Image (cartoon, rainbow, N blue to C red; front, side, top):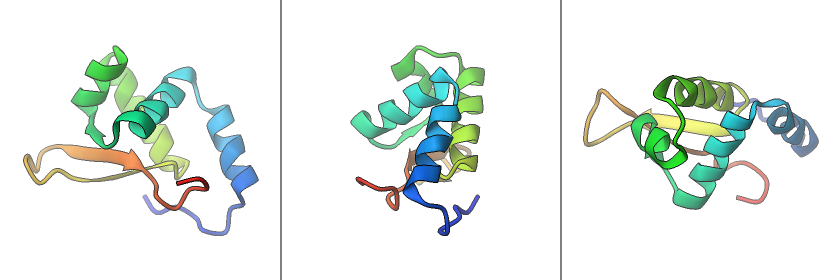
Length: 88
C-alpha cells in the first residue's frame, strides 16, 4: 500500500502512538534487526503469527513499514521500515 507523502512527521508520530503494543514491538524489532518475514518477526518478538500479521498490516496501512516479495521464497513477503520516515 502506498504511503501518502503529504503527511507531516507529527501526523506519522501520532499514527505510531495510536498503534497497539504488538505493532510497536514489531516496528522496533525491524528497526534493530532489519528486514524480516512474518515468521522471523514472530520468532524474534515471541508474538503469535496471527498477532504479527495484524501488526504488519497496521504498520503498512500507517506507512511505517514497507513490504516486498522475498527473492528466496516468492510465497513470503519481507518487511522493513519505510526509508522515507524521519530519522531513517
